[in-house]
Length: 234
Image (tube, rainbow, N blue to C red; front, side, top):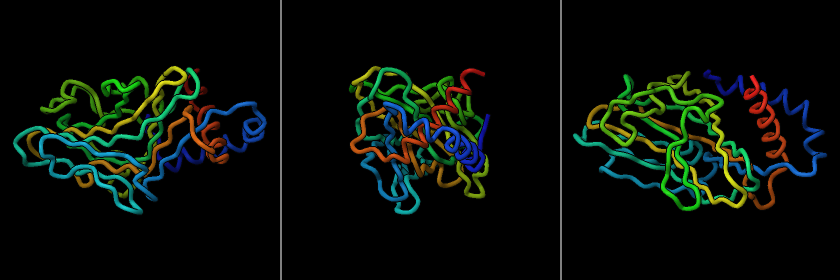
């Protein structure tokens, strides 16, 4: 189900009002790290291959954007990778990102969320791990790293109006695991969606070790965690 950003924020505000007291009184609340890309690049790094025409680029006030390629005649990819994080406790680690995308439709190009654990190769987080606004293209047919698989495809809701959505995925890791998340854009030989192809303004990762975590961030994550657990039970 696709959920636009304003609707999700309204739900979160209601949940925060209901659970803030209990969260602040709890013995332990899993830490959350927030990367606000409108303020800084947050130490994310870019790697690309295939001479991509418009790789990931950071702009103050906007965040990270990638345009991809349209006329190379060969596949290309651009990857945006987080700093390494340490998992706090064994169990679920939510990954939330605020974004919009316009990926060449009809299953040609694709974009996906990837993760590396303990220095291993990056692997795709599947659509089944998303609780909100997961992948929209299945059986991608373009000649690139996501060919035959799934990923974001077409335009996200409200893209033309500049609206963003919030996607939430959950992985399961062990305490002490070192993880990195990565946003992969994949383009075939020709054509591309509207520009930017992908725009990410914020990323939140829960259940990780964060120095001096912001208490407001913890309350927000606690409410999000409650929402995720509620959706799982349905």
